[in-house]
Image (cartoon, rainbow, N blue to C red; front, side, top):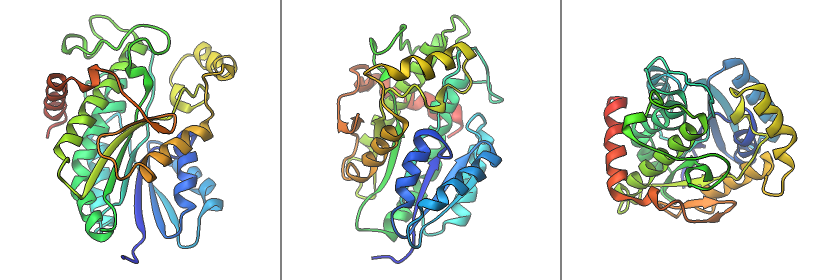
Length: 299
């Protein structure tokens, strides 16, 4: 068994669900956690806030990562390859947002789609070699990729319509509905997760799964929403019976890549293996959106 610290990489992780999950990661002995954070000051604060939870031999750091630009994703991946020659053990794709006004990124993609899907899709592809190195370093179990998903990819879940994932309105230029765009991004994420899982079916080095942490109105996901939306989610929706706490969400994400590590192509919801939408299992759509995603991120 390797004496090298197991390396965990998480997008986000300085606040919210990611922070609660990060607390559980660093409470394990002999791990090193790397947080990819858009805001370096908030990233540094997250690292400081995690220090009281560090187990013996465990460490944490943050690196700049802005999922609204592919250039930042590529730079982050390059820096990881240079700083972690032994590879990485676990990749948690936790960061995300919900934007209710149409905003395009510097790469000219709708913001929900790029931050929640395209940039993390690109990051996974760039880090697959490091995950394989990680398995060689820690061969007792497969390296693991965990996508933080959402039940809102399923039609009929929550309020509003959608998802309505079509190439004709992928940027919201024909009709924009922020909730639909968020739902689309999470559906696209799952379609590509299942495609990746199928490609890894006979690969003992890497497993990939997705987890819905639950309906958590108090998370920072809504940070770019309007004031009325933020107030309603914090003070009204957080009190309904279907709501979960940020702590519960973090525990569910942690469980997905610890207890669920041996699984490949699993979808977990509220702490248990569950069934994602029928559309997410559509083989033609999986192949279409995988190819489209690969093309537009430049792979």
